Image (cartoon, rainbow, N blue to C red):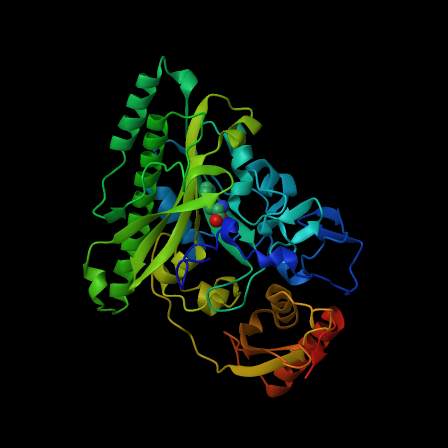
Amino acid sequence: MIATKLPINVICLAKRNVFATALRTVSTQAKPTEIKVQDQTFKTDDWTNATPRILELVGRDLHKDPNHPIGILRDLIETRFQNMGYTFYGDFKPVVSVYENFDVLGFPADHPGRSKSDTYYLNKDTLLRTHTSAHEHECFVKCPTEGYFICGDVYRRDEIDRTHYPAFHQLEGARTWSRNNFENEEQMLTKIQQDIDAIPKTEIVVSDTTPPFDPETNPKQSYMTDKETALVGQHLKRTIELLVNEVFNEAKKSAKLAGSTEEYLNEPLKVRWVEAYFPWTAPSWEIEVWWKGEWLECCGCGVVREQVLTNSGIKDTIGWAFGIGLDRIAMLLFGIPDIRLFWTLDERFKSQFKEKTISTFKPYSKYPGTTRDISFWLPESKEGFTELHENDLMEIVRETAGDLAESVKLIDEFTHPKTNKKSQCYRVNYQSMDRSLTNDEVNSLHDASRSILAETYGVHLR
Ligand code: PHE
């Protein structure tokens, strides 16, 4: 499923857990009939699962704060791409339609990314965008330049640990060439080649065994010629290499400044290309970066499918798109050990960062964590038990404990050989980034999570 242990990018929608859809997602908690988000009111229904705590994050706009690590990283990338034909967008609201987030991009009806276990819905037609690709359509329609960048906060129901948070940030890029601007194919190919040659060269060491397309594993689209596909793919790959070079060389500098003497910091940056799949691009790839002895998934991309462009009223046009997750890269750049820190309102965090400056985070204190377990038998059914989606449990812990839940891990699971009943045990680490927690406080949060879990999903607490 996920290629690396610490994927830098968000887990790509196309590869997410296929079990998600099959699993039960029930909530018996009372729901308001309407919810308000950024001055808009939405009628709730059976699909509504966006929680008050998640909705509180909407509008924080960390990517628009020039003195916040996320805003600084965005600025670093956008500055690199100034005067290269891109328009920069950062104001799109995160509430989008199912059409924008999934349908227009060609996500199949049964794609796991659409499930309530993975996505926050306001109601059946409206959701918190799960990726900035939700705005590709709109940008293709209105963008005045050949290319654009979109930065925004995105939301996914997910596990809880130091590198996963249900809200994070993405930067989307896209670039097109219109056949109508050229007299013939030759002329157009010459222009794309010139555009490739104009991309500043990097010292990056690239390993790329992926062909421009592969009929079996990474097909091209029939509306594009082989040469068009090859050149658009090259322009895309050189562009992303430039981006990755900019960001990771900064990350190396900052690691060195922070005192790290690891060998790889003195070696040229190494990246590799691997084939990927996204419903709205073909062929598609992912770039991985060699970082601290591991290949980190960094950015998904591909040649835009004709349907996305024609749905935007654009004909005879070819192009590419990519999406990169910013939060985990910002953790590397700024030496931030826990993704929750991005969202803290503590001045001791915020005051450390300044516009256009990569600096290493100095922990202002470390407060001890304390763990509590939740053990239960899953509700009985014909098969012996009914599954509980891990994200549903995560959500209950998040809703009760908020950012005090540092991590939640499944630590034990077994099926009783005779009764076929299944038991699970999750361990929650409660740890504040800003203060000490009392035992009473942790106990009451933990008890609340346990009761809600039992009430909502019918598990038998042990
Ligand atoms: N939106 C994809 C993700 O979130 C990334 C992507 C963007 C892939 C654009 C292809 C093209 O994983």
